[in-house]
Length: 143
Image (cartoon, rainbow, N blue to C red):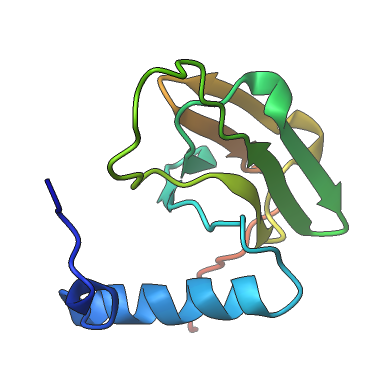
């Protein structure tokens, strides 16, 4: 059974996948290894916090490293490929393995001392609470 043809490797299905392939390949070629990937991240803003949802299934919470340097939050880790059953033959591997690193510039109105993270059902959820004392938006009344 052959799912991917040689043509599928060169012709993207959509413009978005073309852009993703360009940036993923560029990151891999420039200083990364052939076994690196860029996980998908959802960024959500609520009234009280920002949330980062990083899609990295098949990992353990010990596999992540989260660093905060000035206002830059960096999430990195490694998903290792393990093949436990020797009697099976791999026909296709579409999941991503290797190292990854994603960095985010935090806004000024966050409380960095209360950032927390949890790993649930393959999603790393990083919650960055807003500091209500620091407001980025001010309404000025005209007299």
